[in-house]
Image 1 (cartoon, rainbow, N blue to C red):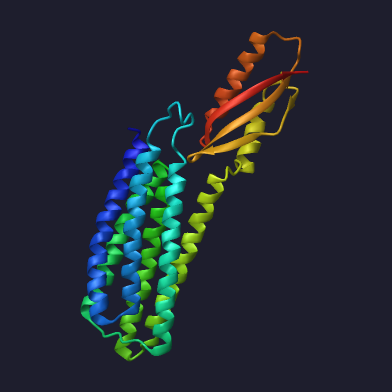
Image 2 (image 1 turned 60 degrees about the horizontal axis):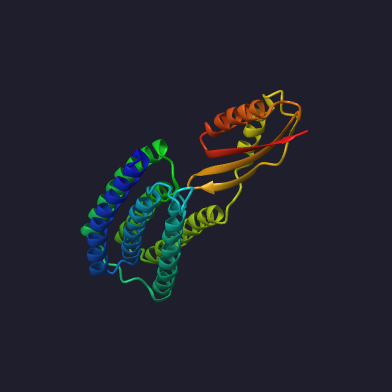
Length: 286
């Protein structure tokens, strides 16, 4: 199996184990202390477990090599399962927003506890470790599943920090901040979910390669003096890379062998770019 898929699989497993641990301690302490912020944080951890599971499954499918029924492989599974992650995040955020607004209106029943402080600190440390590990893997093997998990771990560090503030404020009899933090957490989760959803949607709807890469492809093509004209670049996403279709025009008097040799050279050079999965060059005579 490709190193990228092995690394993503490992990140998904570590994420599941870490989030299961956090869910158990957050839910227990949150309901015992009546902290809406901590309860919201525990629901967030439940969503994180689902996200890590989707990362594991999506990565497993995406790692299957191309076959006669899937000539370009199974790379889009990454985006399909990242969309599942985003939908679950939006759903959880909606429920948390409703509960947090009610808490703000009717008042918080939060009771200060040193266990809450311990859970917050444990969460921040665990999530920081998961964030830096996932970030390290993402830099080496970039894909949307790792990106979604990396953002999620980072968001959780910020969310739990605000939860910690709301708990500490109860020492000076400020209880309303608990509901405010719950609302803030839910809105942040929703924003992250929408961002991931749109990125996945664009790929599944065959978004074109970015203009910077297009310009780079044209610059490469223009280094071949024999090319007299270049048609528009057509592209389609394959996982985190793109399949490129390019039509060039050459002197009609050169031999078929020469034109195909040039096309093969151009295909090989363009396919060497980071974002390119494969290049297909079609030759037309002038």
